[in-house]
Structure formats: structure tokens, C-alpha cells
Length: 175
Length: 422
Image 1 (cartoon, rainbow over the protein chains, first blue to last red):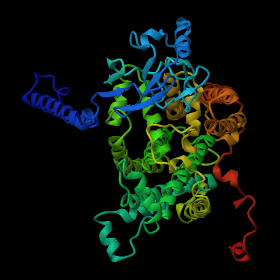
Image 2: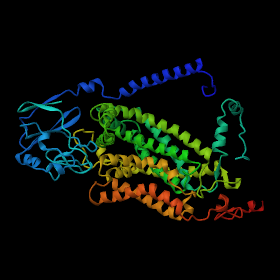
Image 3: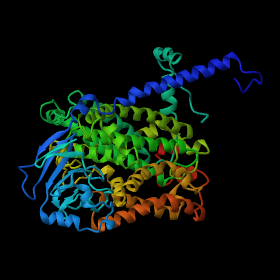
Image 4: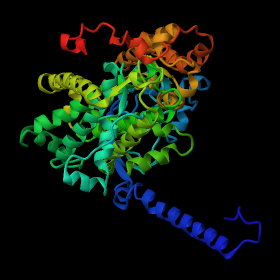
């Protein structure tokens, strides 16, 4: 209508613009609950609270799997040989360069805690497999070392570390 | 289009109806007297077969939904209950699971037919794009349906496919959490997949209406790729196309029934009869056969983000086909070079499907990369260039000239004596 009249804007023009604006804002506001309902609900978030893991029963060289927020968490009690292998790597040559010291807590070199989900497409790597005696993902062939760093295959990143802290020398809290 | 008889309602009720909702006239003009090119071959019957398969999937799916429970604790058991306890449940489920394979088989034949005879070219671009949208909807619907039995393959297919979105820079992780409704694939994921798996077939049905509408505006392509010019070039939809469609549908149903009754699990994975276990990924995880070529393309690229982009591009590139192919000639019958590149493309697609089922190592990866390169080169290099340089064969003057000699079908038996006198 405005294009057809060269005169001043009319009250009808005002009504058109005002109506369209209200309708647009209303439609956008309606989308908020429709989209937000798909995010994790309150019970899912509550079930994602921190968990405590007792480390004392885990033998030298043993890997255990615990679940936190539906994700498998690997707790690897590394042997001296594995620690040395993880530390004696030319970090600059790694696809996702990270020294082993950045992937464990200070003074707890033997405890490697990581999220056991391949950073490629979310499969569960198998512990103590692959050429680096670390982790091997059977889906698309990604290979991780004993520090959980990506060494071969399509995965772009090292295995992620969950937030965790040592409550004592034999107990950690994940989350 | 003129010269065809108009609809004359035969009963008082239909005459009453026709003045209020002219559905009889619509059916009559669209599916009875509608002119179809007289040279259509059997490759043109797969549209009808696809409509039939959509009907089969909707009917069996609605019935299965009456017995299925979309909950992580009950889904697997409810599917087993359908198989063992529900009356004819085994038949209905096998029809549905095999039906998905048959649906994709028909869709791929339909798609390759369109590519061979240039059915995507002006004025059928919108018709073609609607078809690509239908393929995309089928892929999404099929994937979500595969998740519902909540076996190992269901769970890990859901995990791997939703994780494709984690490749998106910056917001990827948030998008994946939003898709899951949790921090991993779980009950909220199963529930929403069930809801969408029920919804999308009806969206497909709606797009099919647009697809058929666009077809009836532009008219059907045909093996010569030239438009009908006179009434001699066309025959009525009924009985000619109807009987041809019905005949091949019956043959297709024999194949369908063969799988349903004799090898219903041939196209499924044994691992999916193991209940979903979030702690263990199966050693060898592969999608259903109809996704294997795309899966092979994903795995051929040694970079996560680029692999996902290539996967999406391999489907979406089809929508641009009408503009990538620069040739004025539609049908491969008159494009000798295109015909060879086309068949190489078909072999590459089948080869990618074969490689998609193989472990991602050694020569399998090498060949997957070569085939992926050809797949994209076909669209981005070969088609644009070939249209400019190819020497096409001369086109016939009309459809009837290509199939009739002195007014009689080429290769047809002599007409019966009674007809000869006329």
C-alpha cells in the first residue's frame, strides 16, 4: 500500500507495521518454549550430579569404567612403563598437541581419568588396544595412546577429560 | 491437451458431488485421460511403486505403533513381543522393516532413471528438487525408525549420526545435547525420535502431493527426452500407464514378499537383536545398506568436519543437478559420452555401498577416496564440461517417429484381421 501512495504514511500503514511487528515478536516468543523443551530436563540435569569413585580396589594396569551423565568414564591406573611412554612423546608432532602433565592431576601421574567417548563420532574406544597400548575405537579406527591423545585415525581431538578432583589419595569426585 | 473427453458423471450422486467437490473430475483428468508419452518404458513405473511403498509403510507403521512402547526399558521387549505374541506381529514388523529397504530400492531406481533420461532438466527443476527433498525426508525417517527397536545397532546408529552435528564449529556440542535432550543418547532421544518417525511419513505424503502436482504441470519426460508434440505422441493414462504400473508393481511385490517370507533378516543386522548397551560399542558398526554409499563418503575423508560436509554435500548436490548439467539434450540415448559417464557413476555408487560395509582400513580407504572423488567430479566437472563439448546424436522429430513406422508400433506383431479391414 505504501508503495502505491506518494502521500504521507497513513494510519493504515501504521496498523500494518504494528500488527506485523506484534505477530513477529509473538511468533519468536512461541518458538522459545518449543525449542527449549528439547534441552535436558530438570531430572536429567539433577541425575548429572557429581559422583565419587574409590580408587583403592583398582590394580596396577587396570582400567575401570564408571558412568557419569550417561557417559562412560575410564579410570586408568597406569603402570610405570605406560607413564614413561606417555611422557616421552614429541608433543609437537601430535595431531592435538598436549603434554601428558596437562592430562593428569599434579602428583597423580598414575591416575588417568578421561571420558571414554571417541571424539570422532561418539563410539566407545576399547582400552588396552591399538599400537600404543592405549585406546582403539572400533567404529572408524581412531587410535589413542595411554594418555588418551589421538595418534591415528579420523578423530580430531584427544579424549576429553571430565571435571574431577582428588578428595584423598584413593578417592576422586567426578563432576 | 485438448481433444480429450471431459468428465461426465455417470450417477446422480456423482453429478451432485461434482457441483460441490469436483474430485471425480480431478481423478478423471489426472489418472484416466491424462496424456502420457506413448514410449514410456518400465523404468517409469517406479513412481507408482514408491507411492505404494509409502502406503505400505504408513499402514504397517500405524499398526506397529499400537504395540510398541517408546521407552528405553521397554522398547526392545515390546518389539520382541510384537514378534512373538501379537497376532501376525512378525508379519507386520517384517513388512515394515523389509518395506524400508524396498522403498529405498525403488527410490534409487527412480532417481537413476531421472538422471539417465535427463528428467531434471527444464521445465522439471522444481519437480526434481521436490524429489531430492523426498529422498532427504526418507533418509531421516528411515534412520529414526531404525533407532526405535533399541538394539545395539539402534543405539550406536543414533549416537554416531547425532554426533555428526558435533562437527559444527562452536555450537556443535550444544546442538548435540539439544538433539539428545540429555548428556548422552537416552530416553528423551528415543521419545522424540518416535514422535518424529510417526510425523515425517505424513510430511512425505504432503511433499508427494506437490511432486505429483509439479509432474502434472510439466508433464512426464520420456525415453527420447523430447516433448510430446501431437496427440499421436501420447496415450491415455488409463488403461496404458495404469496397466504398465500395475504389472511391474506386481513383479516388485514378488521380490518384496520373497524377502519378507524367506529372508526377512537378510537386510538387518544380527547385532540389533542385542539390547542397547551404552557401555559397549559393537566391533563392526555399519548402517543399513541404503545409507552405505553416504557412509563410505563420510569415512573416506580423514577430517571430521570435512567428512560431515562431504556427507551432506553428496545428497544436497543432487538438488543442483539441473544447473550443473549444461547439455541441451535430455536423454542419455542421444548422449553417447554422457551414457558412459552415467554408468560409471552407477558403478561408483554401488562400489561406495560395498566399501561402506567394509572396515575403514588399507585399500578399502584408498578406493573409497577414489570413488568419492569421482562422485563429486561427476557433478562438478564432468557434467558442466560435457554439456559444452559432447557431440550428441540427432534427435528424432517426434516421440511417435521414434516408436512408430507407418503408424504401427516398431516390433509389434501384425494386427488381427478384423482390425486390418478398418
